[in-house]
Length: 104
Image (cartoon, rainbow, N blue to C red; front, side):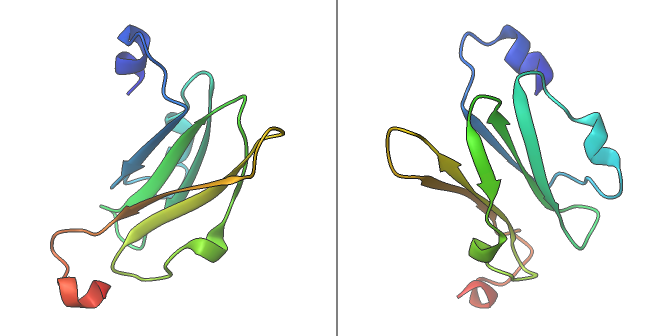
């Protein structure tokens, strides 16, 4: 991710990543310059969700909007702007080894 950002002419406002495998204190290894980092650990070693949000954006995590379902990885935030209403951003990942019936 850092390599891509170092060579990219564009810098997204928000980057969402799933299956992060960031159990314990591994999240300290993934800071990216000019971005805030927020993540939600999952119950297994393979899962987890994270968002990188540009430093100039004001946000708060919104755990009340998460699905609270052990079969998905999700993370939601609310972005604030002095010029317009707030915006909700989330990342949801449904691992392929789960049954689609479990996600209904």
